[in-house]
Length: 189
Image (cartoon, rainbow, N blue to C red):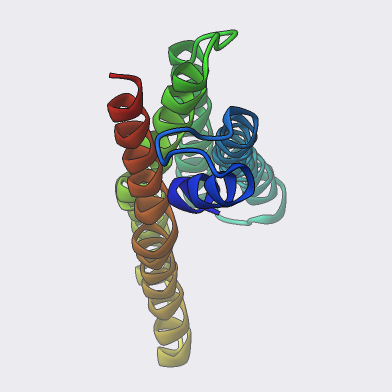
């Protein structure tokens, strides 16, 4: 339910003017959206950090080419460190205890902005380093054309999926939160 739906339901049930809203329902909605954005951000961060560390460890223990192992492992650890650093910045930017609906909404918007930036820069901090190390390794050996097609297709698919997620999930969520904030600030003013 969006803000206007909540307002209509409230008005129908109470026969009160249009500018009166159910603050408890609104607060629950804002809290739900804020926790959803935070949960998605945490899942993305922890998932990327775990993938980076496990891949780095696997490259060191399983591989047979020392130079490639070191370069790929460092690239993956660098990716994990970057995600960890971004997580620390995100958590530091959020206030500890939001005191109002607008403060809670501002935190949700901050998390939504973070997710948008996370998806927009994915190519630079994950896909590009991983692709460069992988392609470097593939050029050092005789590789079947089907493997080239598979690897390059995988990178393209990862890029397209992140762009799809950005356009279909993160940007609409951010826009909805910003519209809700704009509506609330008009109501308060």
